[in-house]
Structure formats: structure tokens, C-alpha cells
Length: 622
Image (cartoon, rainbow, N blue to C red):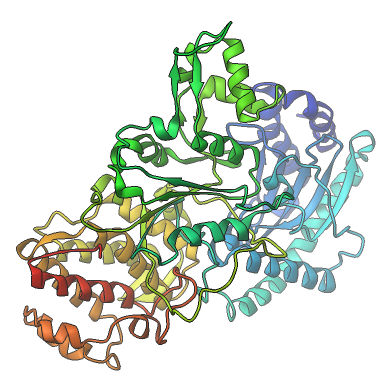
């Protein structure tokens, strides 16, 4: 078995060559996973068997920065949390750092990127002040071609750099490794002290201006005409654009007006034609603004790209958006990226010869040496992880209703009529763009694994996972005998929503489940009184058991009537509603995604749906 120095030399010297070769069955990738961890374990035997040593060249694809982590389970489960020692290999093969680093991916999901980085900065400052790190550099440059690779730089607490052409002896390497592990061991009580301080300030559930708190990039914004739904989408593009070009409209924003005559996907995804060909052309792919937008998103992964489908239900969504509705369910994590099946399969381009393909790439702005050119030709065009689709909806007699297929795949939100004295601000780029992280993949098992040991005191439950599943079972019991019961997809998306919001208190969990009911379950309920009345009343009573309604005007009396299975329209009309009921304020908050008081958002919607039964029919949609 090679020693640690031999392993570092092997990886640094071969990295630039091997990363150009296929990842699958690559010898260097296997070396990083096997030989390198073995050499490190043999060098740190005296520190005990509890340290978890893992090497990663990437998963499915080459990483921008290969690494080997040495994790103490007392302070971290993986590289997304806590702090740990890690070898970070520069993306250009110029050398390797031994770093005491910290995980920020998990905190970003819970409390947002800005607060997570502020906490990481504080941890770094306290560690360097109180531990023996004066001989360890506080800045590193990994020369990574990917944003994920560069994300290891700012959380670095202390590091030593070994250049590829001058890696020190085995003795020095082992001495450095033992030193950083000793420092890490002494850092545990300091870390625990800092975490107690953080707990006083985190988990306030203050959502950022855009919808990173949702676990998938597909949102339906409903509401009366003129409430600013499409404007809100454009505003997010301004706020989150991280590129140098600042034009109007933003580069990362596309408005697609849906037309009533759309009955297939060609208006969005384009098509192959043999008509009107020029000399030397075999076929031509007719691209669309949507396709060009997908390609731009692939070319600029640092910023989210906001697609606004304006009046998306003017045409049957299942027909013109069928491919997207299916492909969004295939999103998964591979290596350092969220990937999906192709929305435009490679087979679509089979009719194009090489010159046809070159012409198509030229139209899309893909240069000859751009790796996307070969990727699209051989694998098709899939959903970029930075694409966010927001459909705006005005519900009236001229529009199409939503099928379960659509509602199950989107988060539905309502844009209310706000304070008419506000809303004068012009759209503009901020001085500093909002930090953005890709959405979580729709994998409930991953959320289950991370939430499984988080404890909460609510309804007699000890874990967040148990509390969510138990609550959903209660929802289904109250929907028994109706077609509105929920299954695994809703469960998984509520787990991911809980993880994304960083839930840590009973109140925060109630607010999150309120969002789940309001945006994933209530939109499914529509029909006549026989079909919907019992379900709505039972859901209202389920929420009322946990909501503090004593000071809510008219609600205690209304709950008494509902508990007797009555539907008193006068009590419904008298019950307090609107922003004062949901937010404890007389005006709507500027952010439509702001969390309401626990259960109030769904109760407010159920009240309006019950009132509609006066006309013998009700639905979520106004």
C-alpha cells in the first residue's frame, strides 16, 4: 500500500490528465476512494477507530475539487455539517491543502445562505482566536472551475498548502496531520459553546425574498389579475442575478405568454422540420425562446434562471407542458449537481447531420469547443439545476382547471391584493445579489435520513420525522372516504420543505405543515357540498386544536358550530380573516411567502372555501 506522500503525489501529478477521461471505472478515481483513505487511516491509528475517513473524486462525474475528509462523529455526520479535517486538491492539479474546514451546505438549507456564511465566519474567527492556528493560513485558493468546489474556500479555518512539485516528506505530512487532528479535538468544547450561542438566534423562519424555502423549482402563483404575480417573478430575477451584464429585462428572466391554442409541446420545446431547407441541410431544429433560455441557464450556473409562464392555464397544462411535468420528477443528486432526465431527448436530434447540428448550436450561442455541445448531442437537453418555473394563474370561467398531475408536482401559492398605498418601488439590481443555492432534489429518503434524529416536542412526538408522518396520517383520517387523501409524494415534499426551512421548534413545524396543507392539499379539494363539506370541516377542526384562536374575532364561536357539524354562514362571515388573522397585522407582508401564524393560512382559506358552498360548489381557486 502506498504511503500518504506517495498518494498525494500520485493524485496531483495525474489529476489534469485523468479528469479529461471518462469517470466510470477510472483508476485514479478508484485510487482516491481506496488507496488514499487507507494511507490516511494508517497514519492516524492512534487517534482511534471512530474517525470516519472518506475520499471522493466525485459521484458519477469528476468533482471540481477532489477531497478526503476525516470526520469525528461527535461534531459532524458528513461534510455538510460541523467541522472536520480535509485534504482539498486544487482543481488545476497545482497542489493540495490540508484544511480544518466546516460544513455550510446543511446550515444553508436550514437558515439561508447569508446567515450560514455569517455563522461560518464567526466560527472561523473564534477558532483562530482560541486555538493554536497561528501557523495555519486562513485563506485558500482551490482554483476550482465549479462553484461547489470554490465553496470550500470561505469556510476554511486553517490550512497548509503542499505544492505539487514540492510535497514534503512522509514524516512532515504525518506531523501536520496529527497536529490538525489535535487542534480539532481541542475545538470540540469551543464548537459546542458557539452552537449554544447560535441557537438563540437561528430558526426565526424569516424567508428570503425568493422561494428557496420550497423543495422544488415549480411554483404556481394564483390570484386576481393585476396583483403583481409576473412582476414578482421578474423582481426575483433582478435580485438574484450574479453576472456582470445588467440589462432590462434581466438575462435570467423569460416571460412566456401561454396561448389558448397550445395543445402540444412544440411551442415550448421546438420541433424538427424538413421544410424550407437550404443547401446541404438534411433537417432543421426549430428552436424556441424556452429552449434558448434553457441553454443560457446551462451556460450560467451561478445565477437562478426564472421562467414565468404567464396565464399558464389558458391552455391545458398537461398537453403543452407534459414533458416538464414528467421530467421534474426525475431530479436527483449525482456528484455535485442536481440532474434530471432530458426534457428534449438526444433522439430528437438524430435527424440532424453534423452541419445541421453546428448550425443549431450557432443559433443557440454554443461555441465549437463548449462541452455542452457534445453533452446535448449525446444525452439531450435536461433541466438545468438553476431553472425555476413559476406559472401565474387567474382563475375564471375562461381558464382550464388543474389536474392532480399538475397539483402534485407544484407548490401552489396565492398572491393577494395587497396594500394599495404600497408597491411603488421600481425594479432594479441590488448592490449585492441575493445568495442562491440550487433546490433540493425531490428525494424524500434523503430528507428522512437528515431529519430522522432531530428531536421536537409536539403532540407527544419526539422526532420531527415522526411528528410529520403522524400529522399526515391524521389528515388522511379526516379525508377518509374522499378522493383528496395524500400519499408518498406529498409526504416526501413536506419532509424536504421541513428540511429546507430548518425547522427546530414546534411552532416552526406547525407553520411548515400549514404551508404544506395550504399549497399541496387544499388545492386538490373542489366539488359540490356533498363532496367537500365534511372534508373541509374536519380539516378545520384538526387545525383548530393546535391554533391559538382565543383572541381571533369570531373563531371560537365558529369552531363550536363546526364541531357540531353545522355550517353557519353568518358565523363564517363574522369570523376574522385576511392579514390581521394570518399575520397579526392589518396589512399584507411585502413577501407573499412570509410565514403566517401557525395554521392560520390554511384556516383562512378553508373559511373562504366553506363560504363558497352557499352556491353549492367550492374550490381553492378564487
